Length: 140
Image (cartoon, rainbow, N blue to C red; front, side, top):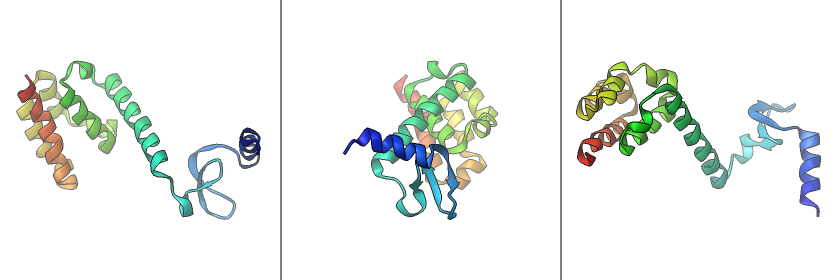
C-alpha cells in the first residue's frame, strides 16, 4: 500500500479541519475525519498537542510580559502553568501578582496568587504554583 496516496486521498475526500466540528451524522470530528467522539486521541497525540500548547503559552507570555525572559526559571514555569490554565487575558488581570513578580518580590507574589478566586477554584494546584514562585527566593 502507498501510505502517501492513501493519506492524500483521505485529505481530499474528508478535508482537513483544525477545529472540532460535527460531521453530517452529528459526530464530533477533528483533523481528517477523526472521530474524536468515539475514538478520542492517543497518548502520543495528546503529548504532541501539549508540547504545542506549551510553546504557544511561552510565546504569549513573552509577547505580553516584557520581563518574562528575565525571570527565574521556576517563575517562568509557574507563569506557563497559569497561562495554560487561565489563558492570557485572565492571567493579565492578576495585576498585583505580576507587579510583585516584576519587582522580584516572590513571597508577596505567591501570597497574592493564593488570595484569589483562582486559588479557591483550583485548590492544591494553586499551592503548587505558589511554591514554584517561592522557589525563586531559594534559587537566588
